Length: 237
Length: 289
Image (cartoon, rainbow over all chains, first blue to last red; front, top):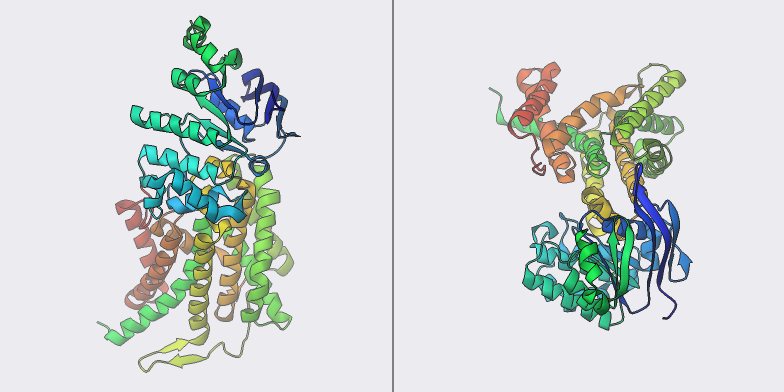
């Protein structure tokens, strides 16, 4: 495996008196799709928040693109090219679609803003039709497109997608996973954090299964899909 | 009943007062909209700005010139206070920010009181009593200037909020703090810029008020009470609401002064305040809760 773009070692993080993540080790290689799977409340979103600097880790290191980033504030992590598309989209509801996308390049790739805007519109033609519309009035699927588009505006070196399929119709979920594959084919490294196990394993090169703040299983996507331990781990049986 | 031209004159006068009200309210509503706190130091900052303008005049600088120095100065001071005092001392708790701004207002007011006593000071500028003759009424030149400059300041602020990346970042943080962090917006910086903009609006208002008003260590409070009414009327956090609300409140005050007598002019403002709370608590431009 090439030198990983993301290497997490011994990561511990939590809120208040409780540790949510209890010592995680993981890697993402350049050009890889890595899935982190787990049911609600196992720490997936906490992991993402820690990676993007919103939450300070209590112990462990996060190395991204050759630099330690675990003590850096979110804006420096964005500047380095680790872009997190959060669960629940977190778009700016009162601002237009165009303004949302423009803010995607607030910290990074600002010089290429107009070219990247064009690129995002090619990926999501639906957004082009709605540039002046208030983001809060978009449908759920369109909001998810906007959130991913906003992430792409920063020319990510690694894109974290937190539950991109959440709340979408099966057809849209299919479309979303197809999009992830396309983005990856173009060379983008992706960390896909999902509840949607089978589709994620089908897509990902490798996957980690998170349970109670620790990885209980990991391996190649296809191997994991056949592993009887998966169901046990995932369902907490 | 009054003749129509007297009423028209009252409306014009009200609009001119209202523009300055709007400017004091817009800073308050902006800080509320972004930091989600009522800035209790708002009045004290206005007072401090009026003292600054007063001493600039003592040093030979006309308030209309001083504004170009004081607005950036107060922006910087507001930025620093939020970034290095209010922000760090709040530890992320909104109610702490509330207390810190309240404490700040006490410190500023009493420092001014200790330094300059409770004397009422006025300045004497050559254009202080100049008027423009409209035929049916006279308009005071300093008030016309205040109207024009307030509108210009509001337009500038609007331009910043809608056209610049920093302005868009302010609007983004106001509604979606986590999303803003994740596109790389430094939230602490945006908070400080917002607070600085609020203070700069007050510095402009202070320079516009000074030629026709007086200064003493509690002068800002009268304006802040009105500003608070405007913020509620316009919708908490709404900049257009504060601008239109300010003009409206100015006219209400002027007309109720005309009909009820000068000393009762402010009754109209508080009647409107109570009515808004009863009928439309979200304000004219407020988002539904």
